[in-house]
Length: 266
Image (cartoon, rainbow, N blue to C red):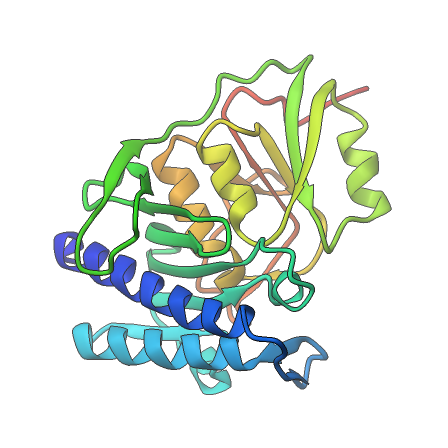
């Protein structure tokens, strides 16, 4: 895969999709529909998906594309594929809480190797460079011109004083019980794939997810975390979380900075 060609396209499409999303987000009102799985979908999801899908297919016609909003793509099978969630955190979008992201990633042999996470309402952009190192971009987010970037890296965690991030919309007792086994310095809540990025920047150490997610929800954030030195493992057996599963559904998982004790006894 030509990462030098891929990364600028993913970044450009994420920024352009983010602009479409913000046009709708800033409007007085927007329609919300319900999909067959009872999850919400908006005009912003659909417009962002159309833009990203068209751009990826034009630039990389030979690479399989899987996207949340196109159910036919969920039947695709292959070792290498692009995977998209055009608006991750639709509930955050609907409730105007800001923690929603555009997610685009490349998966190779079960591993998300390159990805971009753009949070347009938060003015935060994270992506993996062609060489695999993750960065955060600041500036105007011009689709055609790269702004200032800085390398990001996970923290050196203190297991007696961990920074933990958890879901805003999907917090439950099982998650709280697991977090309660740790020595926690501070807790924060965040929506969408931003949770992975907070670990990637060292703003958090641990993100446990004991609930349903799909591969398009996590792949881009997982790639960013990988490129910052972090890891994501299954909750049940602590083996690496892999992609390209038959139904694209994830098991429960833990995202973390290496050094976190994944078998707390407290």
